[in-house]
Image (cartoon, rainbow, N blue to C red):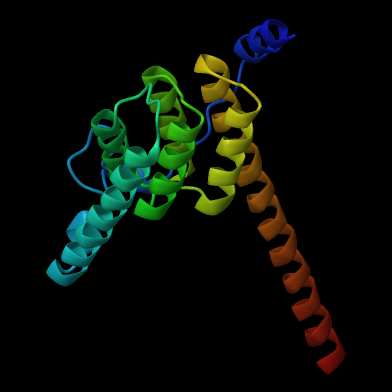
Length: 187
């Protein structure tokens, strides 16, 4: 069943989503970047607070790993993937949540990386990162791994982003109609 689902997902041809503005003009560092998105717009105090928050999250992650008996992915490697996730647009707390879950579920290094990297597809969309964390955990709990996990996460993020855009568009149209009706009544 899983093989069939994997083949169906891989066989689907997707239309590429338009690239968000932050990605076009270089304000997104990306997975292999050296700093989080829009870093140049932050004040020195904001930068210091951000890294202080990340260091605290990393400390919590290490403490979490010390309590685990079996670790398939090394804590140092996992912390590196957390940092890469932050550089690609995830908040430190979301990366901590995902990293803890990945360690608890004893993901192999490759699947841990896929989980973190696929979750970064949320950056540039209006999908709440908390929702993506819940979504990713559901897929991991369902036993999805490898390319299937990657595709499912990215497709679901795109689907939710599209739904949010359509909902906002409908709300804008509704407001516009109400304003037009008010104008007609006042005339």
